[in-house]
Image 1 (tube, rainbow, N blue to C red):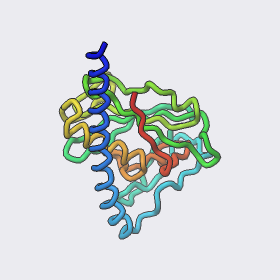
Image 2: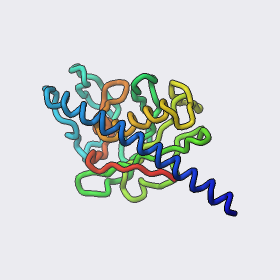
Image 3: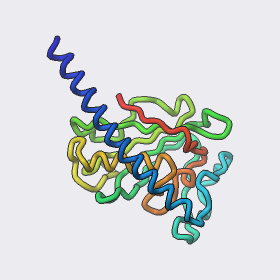
Image 4: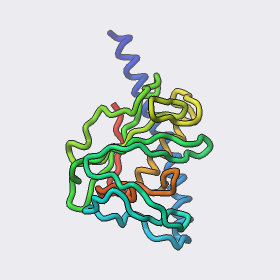
Length: 202
């Protein structure tokens, strides 16, 4: 019994170190991105209409050209890809609630996948949609399933895993577009509240 408790404490401590490393990396990236954003002339993020339920519309991507984009309706789930620095494309699954928890949209939950052993699927152990929140999950670098795959190498919570989670969080915060140049608010009929983002780990 003591041995089992020790293993659980060790696992929790490892998770704490892992998330601390991600947070430190995220703070560094956020500070540098704020500097570049201040000098940018592109329109602000977060101007999506929560009442928009059309299947597609023309959106200007981050290169300034109009591109058609599929807008996921309320209650839908979709897979998109982000470019992770030094790794390549990572698969990200976004699940939308039927309606936002708040009058102006929905908060966002990023669920941290287990990293001691590879979880070969998008991890969703909490039903965030049930309480009106957007749920985001992902595949670790080097993990693939039928219909989706992340590039890179699986390193059991190592540098690639930290970098991958870091970039998924940036996507959830509206600071990183997907691989096609579109931000989360441009892909969802439910307005994501980028100032209401949290991590969940089982």
